[in-house]
Length: 438
Image 1 (tube, rainbow, N blue to C red):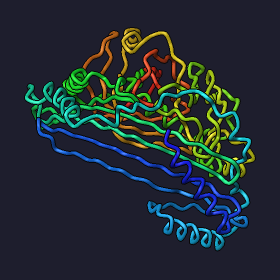
Image 2: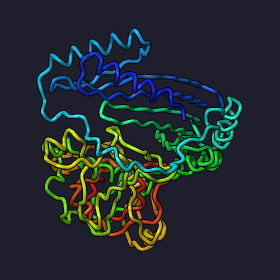
Image 3: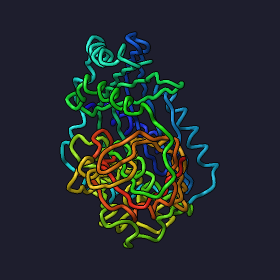
Image 4: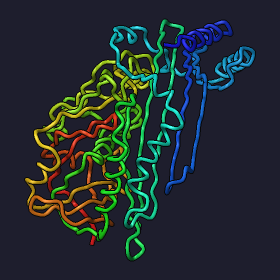
């Protein structure tokens, strides 16, 4: 692993101390990304970006500030830090802004998370074009296809952090993703469109490009003939591709900031059964090759599994040092990593087979939810379920309710978590959901 960034982070901390800071925390990152996009058989876009930057947090005489720069030349950096220290001295004191306690840095996991595939950085132009063409050939020119798009992207990121109270850490990640999108031409001026993508830290985690394109086309063709859905109360089954979004809305207000600012419907619910007992979620940053895996978080807190919901009972919040001080709570971590749901015994098709009727949600079409109350109204599209089978496509409909109430009505979860997301949510089945449509 490249140690040069860690050395530079150490130097930035030492510089801040020399220039008058009581405590300092420096993060340095270096990222490289390359993306290709083909539309209708023509290479339309090629982008490469490389960036490097420093962010530094300063504690000066009880005052705090954070600053960032992309100019890491020694003379420029000294001037930047000197000015940052001076600015910090002019601010008001904030007794809750303290550097993270060094005890939080202890017991850092010593496991290989396998987040780097060095071959990702050597993917050639020819290999990218081959992937694009493999997807394009499955789409462009096919019946009703108005537009076909395929994409390939890679990234390689390095991150290092150091603090004046003993933190030292760095890690790197790579990623490679492919995707295909298609727009169909339907009578009446409708333009059904869908896409499919996948990838991971390693090239070996890419889905097959032809199957990726075939899935995009199949999903789009499933939208043909879509009509406005009904107004009714019925069972809602959420496809794994869409499940992560609604679970993310449920978990969003679990942060210390939301709690302290009274914007969380989860306030005062720790150790209380608040949602269905079939729901259990753990935040696990130690999954090998996990899309959200990490050895430590942004404050240097050593990575560890954190139960979030256990059989419907809230176990923990996401608490960083600052809001932990304000709330009088011990820090856990300020941000999520991999969130993994406990699975049930059946997959999507098995759960649908159990339903005499319902609506399958395949995607959300905008809308909003209130983190303070949990009330939501979301646009949806999907399919009717009739006699245990997927039926006609429907759209132009909304689902409304309250997130806690909705997840109290969760009656089943699948065994088919969506692979290409750090939030591993499977098929979800909810009873008595209100839909508004025709």
